[in-house]
Length: 200
Image 1 (cartoon, one colour):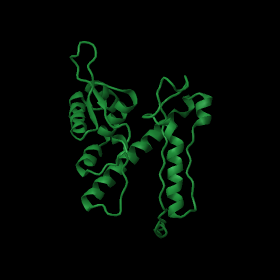
Image 2 (cartoon, rainbow, N blue to C red; image 1 turned 180 degrees about the vertical axis):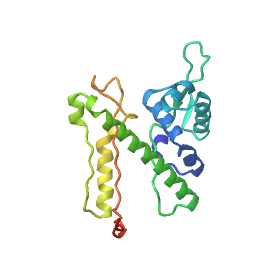
Image 3 (tube, rainbow, N blue to C red; image 1 turned 135 degrees about the horizontal axis):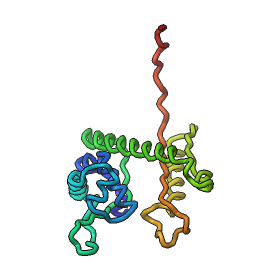
Image 4 (tube, helix red, strand yellow; image 1 turned 60 degrees about the vertical axis):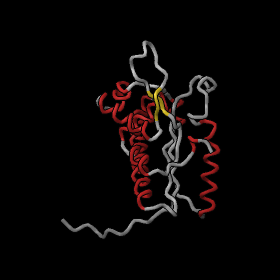
């Protein structure tokens, strides 16, 4: 297993990443390559000094590192180290680890929901081919735990060749863009009855 594919387990690292601005900065570096604190600040919506602080925190836990300088070398460049990582609750997680995992998963899900909302708002400005290729779907499944694990493995296998970390941009088709796939598999927990609303 490569460093990039190793699951996160250090609660300090997960807490450091469980911040919307830091997650957005890491996504920016992974998608667009090396950038300065000022450049990521403009995209993320924080001040350059705040971006520098967030970058140093990400570097402390191995998510980003210094990149080779460009031009006159006066600006500090950063690049992402991990191009992909996983975080999942495990049966034997200690409370501190589970709490950190839950916090990070929630931030990731919030960012994913925000990305989908941006895509929906931009949908009418996309070309017909991208409109036809886009999917916003939710499916109710009926399967056991072993089948759900198998399904996730098959999804991973299908996505593998298209991952940003695995595909050379020079080898992709000329119209290729960065896209997102949001996959969440879990056993449904039924809603509890809330009772009828009061009259008036």
